[in-house]
Image 1 (spheres, rainbow, N blue to C red):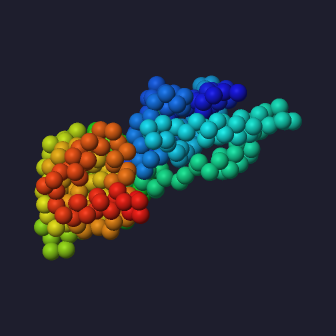
Image 2: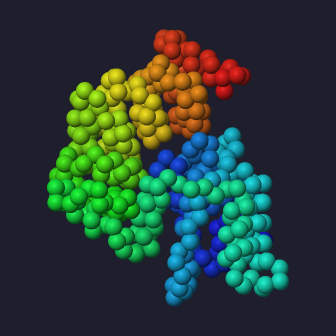
Image 3: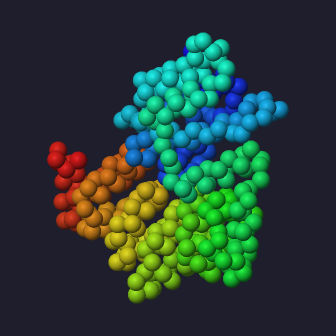
Length: 348
């Protein structure tokens, strides 16, 4: 019997491409996926101590008909971020029995396979925006056209006043986001005119894209406008944080986050969660990490503090920076108290 999912899928004459769907939707190299499956290496992007995987399967035979198949799997990780091999082996056995059930010679395994997936306890349903981005990226990978919703999103990006935002579909916004380089000029010129209900889903999709300063700058200006309002739109600001989170305009984003964390808006739970879950790389900057931990400990319940900190301490590149702030003798009292509760047997 094959020892990895990739091998098992290959025996069924399918190609497979792994994606991560934790903090954002991003492809995983074949080498990284194989090292993870074999137990030799940790999952590259753990989130909440799980590997949130999207597997895109399509026929290895170029002439074969049939639509691609998608599996969304939530795989538990050990203390080192590696795959728990007993769970892998049990799952492989279930799938192998479904693909090659006794008595039918391997014919029509579809119903058995679907049942095996459902029985595994490893299947999950991604958020709507992650599903939309996944399908948009899959279409690009397979060299297929964008969805039927893309033309409307493209028309809105060209001139928001000429198209009703309430007729835009999430899948169209995801198609627009993954094609941001093609549409960069139109987006850069029009983002300030997007209706908030259209900009929010676009930003939720842009979190999986390494946008440059041409889009990062108007997004930051839009957020700063919202911050200046008497009652800032937290949903919009949170979405913009997500939209900027994977941008290559690192300095621009970090200056924005610094300003945000120094503002009262930076004490809201939604804002702090967005920074902690999407901008974790930025928390390697000690000043940002300190402000974030101070705001988190002073304004949020202990349970929220524990959840976010547990997730981030699992990331090797971030652990020492956070512990440096948490153990600093000059730390604020709220940080000392929350960290003490986190370390207590009853607190974590």
